[in-house]
Amino acid sequence: KAGVTQTPRYLIKTRGQQVTLSCSPISGHRSVSWYQQTPGQGLQFLFEYFSETQRNKGNFPGRFSGRQFSNSRSEMNVSTLELGDSALYLCASSLARGPIVYGYTFGSGTRLTVV
Amino acid sequence: SQQGEEDPQALSIQEGENATMNCSYKTSINNLQWYRQNSGRGLVHLILIRSNEREKHSGRLRVTLDTSKKSSSLLITASRAADTASYFCATDLTSGSRLTFGEGTQLTVNP
Image (cartoon, rainbow over all chains, first blue to last red; front, side, top):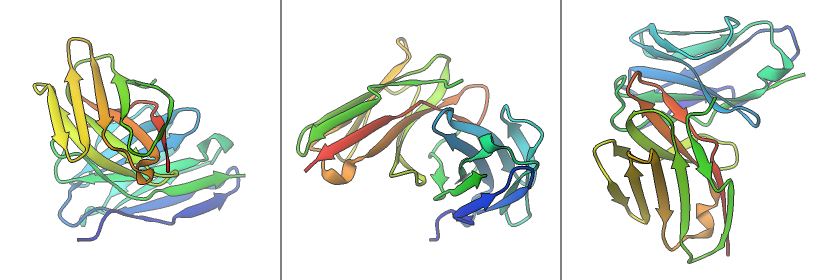
């Protein structure tokens, strides 16, 4: 079966712009989580969606938002981009929300560069 | 801040040797998972060990968990060049459903 699909793979944006990233989970998976990976901060949890509702949120400013659609696809949006938002954004899907039993399946990520 | 700390930060070995990576964490957990990441791509789930388990095997992987010391180790036996990657431990805290990752160990297996 198809894995987790993230689009686009690479993105270059200018400071102040906004960006939308997309994630299609594995068919049948209802939980989608987003993580940011940077060299300085490592992997950090952004938020989790389940059944179109945000269930959990990490310690990120309000410029970071997301949503989940009825088909479980998810988007995350970052407004007023800053240089520090440059990162690899990873999406993970799982069959159900926590406690986690089987582990997450991650997508290949979207590499965002803010210039 | 990161929940876990991994040790060593980098490890370089020869093919056929064993590689051991350690992870420490700070709070009570539901389970601990290990992931592999190749060259800044997505994470691949390797193994999950529950808080009531002490050891788990999967192929060439062996994971141990010591909840009294809040630590875990990942052993890769008979390593191959294809095992070259970054390895992360991740904890599922009892308070929620999100993963908290360690800083990772960069493993290089030389042919």
